Length: 111
Length: 119
Image 1: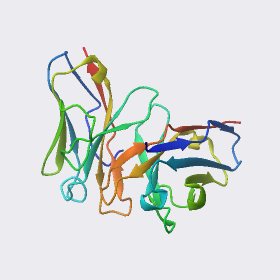
Image 2: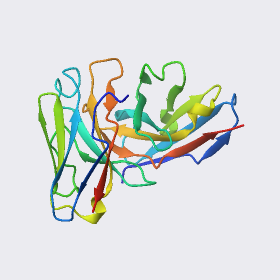
Image 3: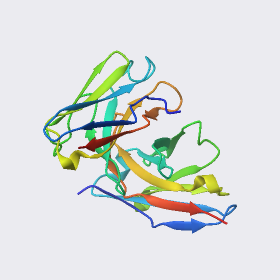
């Protein structure tokens, strides 16, 4: 069982918006602004999409946005495109000796 | 350009040892932590541990403590992940990642090294 809980799958049609949730505890997501999100296409290495809850690295589309409320972080993708179809993982710093925890991943299907 | 280039795929037998590598370039290798992430076939990402090449300070996830060894050779800008006795359950893709500054996120990822352990 992953430390952070994500839905196994979400789907949306091109042009729509979707949101992926990532639920943790006050020891990780809720306690620190160190939530990040990664996109992974099949057979590829993950790619950083959002860091520190809501910041986008240079080169990442502004269609991707992040937020947090309490122990739950969210990734929103607006104007869904076929190329957004991928697995998405959240991650957070944790006060446990693990230091880092990942979510179980969410498969995004663009219908 | 920042790059993390990992060593190639490995096929090993149970009980054998293995050391895979991750060579950093395009930045000051000794100034950024390098971590390792496991992805078993068809599964999610798992945090293994991290090393600061500047002084070899190393932290392990409890799940991997004692199971692997993380090291680095700053003279050749390379981090390593090694096993002394592989198990079939070590079959996975392993990624090295660069931790950005003091933040807990990973801005660069290696291409991955596939380790297959089978008799």
